[in-house]
Image (cartoon, rainbow, N blue to C red):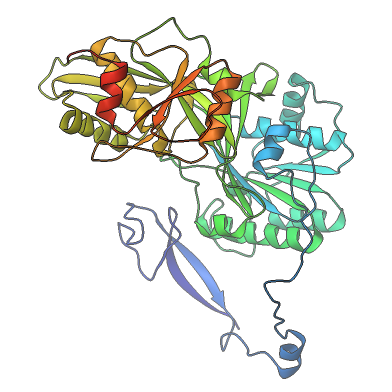
Length: 456
C-alpha cells in the first residue's frame, strides 16, 4: 500500500519544505507555503530488471553527426512566426506569458485562425472562457469562418484523452493555471498542479508530434507564475508585453531551442484585434516635433532586427531637498550611472535638478548601446539645445567617460538611412565605409562639446 507524506510547497518558487513557516527560504516570500500530500509506493522505486535495462541501453552519437533541420509549420502571422524562429516546430511546447488583459487570447485566436485557414488542424482549449465567449470574440475579429476546434475544459484527464483520440497539428491551452489533474492532491493552480499538468502535456506533444502552446499567468513583478521548472520543460518561452495607454504590443522570445532569443514581433491593438507592424521603427518614432530639446533617436537592435526609437529627457529645478529621478522604458540603475559619469567626467551637474527619462512608444530598452543616446538627450534637455534632427545616436559609455563601439553597427546605420536619417553619432572608428555620415567620438565630453557647445 502506498505511503502518504506531507510537504509544504512554496506557491511562488516551488521549493519544498518539511514543515510550515511564515517565510519561504527559497525566495523569501511571505505566506506562500501550502500543504500538499504526496504518495510513495511501498519499498520506494523498484530497480529495473536486466531485460528492461538492455532494452533501454543508452546510445551515443558524435558531434559531427548530420541532422536534418526541423520542419516548420507556418501559421501565417508573420510576426509570430518570426519570434518562433521561422514557424512552429512540430512536437514543440511553447509557453506564452503576459499581464492580464494584454491580449494573449486575442493573439492566439488570430494565430490559430490563420493556421487553420492554411489547412492545419487546430484545437483551442480554454479553461477560463466558455465556448460562446470565444465565438463572440472571433465574430468581433472577423474570424468566425476559421475551422478551429473549440472546447472549454479544465480536467487534464479529459483533455489528454481527447488529444490522444484525435490528431491535431497545434493545440492551445488557455491557461495552464486553470488545469486540474486528479492524480495530484493539491488545489487547482498550485505549483504541484501546474508542474504535473505541464509535464503531461509536454510528454504528449513529444510523443504524438503535436505542437502545444501553453498560456501562463504572470505575477505582479512581471515574472511567470508557477515553478521555474515549467520554463525548463518547454522548448520556447514567449513574453507578450504592452504598456497600458499604448496600443503597441511586443511579443518577445526569452527562450527558444529552435531559434534566436530576444527576437521581437510588434503588433498594434485595434478594435478588430491585433495588427502586425512590419516596420516598428516608423511606428515608435511617430511624428517628432521640429528640433525639440531633450530628444534623441536611438538606433537599437531587438533580436535580429534594428529598431529606431525616440528617447526623451526632461530636466527641471527640484522643489525638494532630494531631486527626483524617474525613468520609463530603461534601467533606473543605468540612468544613475550615466548621471554620475556626466558630473564626474564631463562637469555637467544634475545635483539640484529633477530628471525624467522616457522611451517613446512603450518600448523597453535593455542594451548598453543606449548609454550615449540617453546622455545626449539629458544634456540637450539641461541646456535647452536641440540635437540635429537628422541624426541617430548609439554607443556604450564606460565609467571613465569613454565611448565604446557596439555590435551590429552596419545594421543600425542602414535602418537609419532607410528612414531618412543622414548622420549618426557613435564611437570613433565604429565602421569602415559607413552608408551615411558618422560623427565618431572617443569620449562623452568630446561629443558634448562638439554637438552641444553650451556652458552649463
